[in-house]
Every structure is written in structure tokens, then in C-alpha cells.
Amino acid sequence: MGEHALSLLATDSRSFPVDPPGDLDAAAAIVRTDQQAFDAVGRMKDHWARPGWSDRTRRLYWMATFDRDRALVDRATQCQRALTDLGLDPVPADGLHLTLLRIGDASAVAPATVDTLAEKVAAIALPRLPLLAHPLAGSRGAVRFSVTPWTGLVALHAQLAQAGRELGVPGGSGTAGFRPHLGIAYNPVDRDARPVVAAVGALRHLAPVAVTVEAVDLVELRRERSAYRWTVRHRVPLV
Image (cartoon, one colour):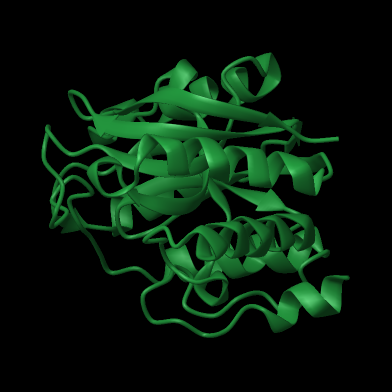
């Protein structure tokens, strides 16, 4: 299964990291790929300066959410406090999430189609996914935990994308560019990345936290005061 999932990924200049890890089941390979990519960043960009987004934007996504996972919340809070002096926008405890797939603008997908999509995904009976969240890496616009392993997440992305294609929803990026991660803070300014990279590197001694993806949420996403918020339209339990 791991080799099949790896075959679904490819080098993608729009993704971060650009290249996927060579082994989707090896935590060390995934973490190393994430950390080396972040360590090579020269400048960070304002995460919130994103074309097509405003306070009125509403978009539908598939997500995994973790607000009830106390150990993960505690580790994220620990890291956020250590990074306070950098002026990042911390992800609230009830905002921790792993983005799986964009479905489309809420105005472009009929409510009946949203309901049918959730029913179609529920009928697949997707498996629960035990993961580890590893401190700490980042991207050009955020600080984030690496998550391992990737095999199940890549397969999940592909199945969610296929369900959307069958219903003709706009969809998001293809599975080839999927790079699972769990953000804990967003960067709100254009800046030299070196101080952030150094502070993040100092937290890599922290142990990973075990979490389980027990459901996928179909959410209507919005931005509020430098944070993402959402309304859950459907929750699909995994089996």
C-alpha cells in the first residue's frame, strides 16, 4: 500500500516541500524532508496575503480536526509559548486541523451536492488513521508539526478527490502535490526566516504526540481575526 501511495505523489513546485519523502511509512524520512525544506527557507511570507481570500470568503474543505485531543493541544501550546517573541499568529486550541482537500467555494457547490458528497464518502467506510505529530518544522508562511505516516493520508486524499470528481465539484489540488502537515502558527509578515528557523529548530527535541484521525469533517471555512474558523456541515466517522 505504501508503494502505491508513493506513486500518487510527485514533485510539485506549488507544494512545500516540493519533493515528497522517499518512504511514506518511515517517520524519520518524512520528518527529515520537512525539516530540511524549512531550514532552507530564506524568507517567510505573510500567510494572510493570499489572492482570492477576504473576510467574506467561504470555502468548503475536507479536514481532520483535533480540538478534543488534549495531548496534542498541550504540545502545540508549549511550542507556541516558546515562539511568542516571533510575533506569529498561534492557531487556537479549537482550531488545530489537518487540511485534507478543498472542495470549492461554498457558493459554487449546491447544498444538495454537499449532502450527497458526504453520503458518498461515508459509504466508502474509510479506516481510522493513527498518526504521530512531530515538533517542529514549517513552510514559507507557517510553523507546523510533521505528521507520520503518510500512506493512509495520501490514500484518503485520493479517495476524497475521486468522490468529488464523480459529483463534479470544483475540487482542489491533486493528490500529487499533497503534503500532510498540522499547522500551529501562521506567519503574518514578510521577514527573514533565520530567526524563525532557529527557534523552531530548538524545539525538535520534543517527543511526538500520538493522535488518531477518527473522522473527516466537511467544513465551511472562513477567516476571522488572523485565524481560520469553520462550520462543520458534515462529520463522517472513520471505521
